[in-house]
Image 1 (cartoon, rainbow, N blue to C red):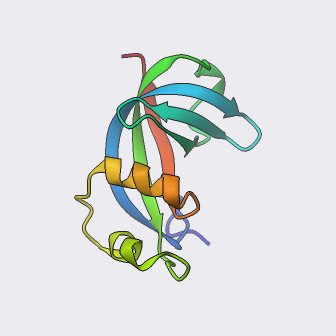
Image 2: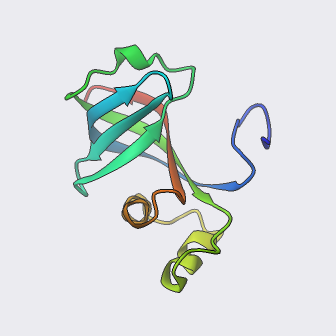
Length: 121
């Protein structure tokens, strides 16, 4: 169930924003291709998907990285509190990434972060 081969994004998700963040890598899992990072500005932990195009072994736990990430929100919001529904359903992609990071803390299953690239700051 994918929108297109080039995007590789499930159609139940809306692309919201592309941004860069300064993070500290806390853990990584090669099997499921995910990392857990601490966002330095918000001091909130988030999980990031790592695509096959990125060599996950190059990421070092405990190290600081400037990451370029894509943010997605789930289209289905039936079990979301009403104060968050407008946020998740809006089509405006100009939302601040901090809002998505905070929403992830409340609804981790409704927000996805996908690592696109990383570099040392």
